Length: 227
Image (cartoon, rainbow, N blue to C red; front, top):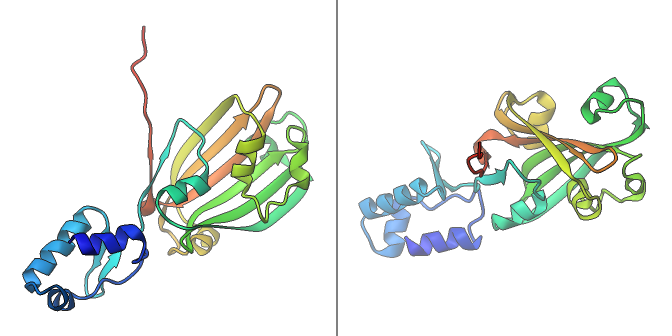
């Protein structure tokens, strides 16, 4: 069991890797098929493997946990899971804010904004779809930033101080576009986090982060209020 677990944890067997059949494992390790089955069952219960009827046993994609009460860097989150990080920007639009943009950023007038869409990858698998609006009155330097190289969320966290954030969390069934970007079936349950951040003067950015539901969960830590 320790040898198989070591292959998984070290990354030698990447997420999606098919585990040898029980008969092959039994021959390799000199044990019974029943023992091999017991080991795979234990590793499945530990969340390291996924057993699919008639297809076999596969290394499971680690389930990510994000803190609801803080703003996290997706790149760091993926690397914390021991996975390789990748990123691709597929849409960049400079425009004056339309009515929907103004609602999302809580603007009272139509400011210039930068609208971005990108996909975050974990070991070459889609991890999170990010759609983001940046208020250029609050962050004019974003206009010159190369978001083909720098993920917008991480770039903002490093350069723009914020004092207030608002999260809205919902569950959806993936649309055609979302399913295509996340490499899931249309209608797959997804977890959506919408976030709006503000500095001393104005709202800075709005983001919509869409995760495949089975691969992600949110956690929150809090203490009792004192009355």
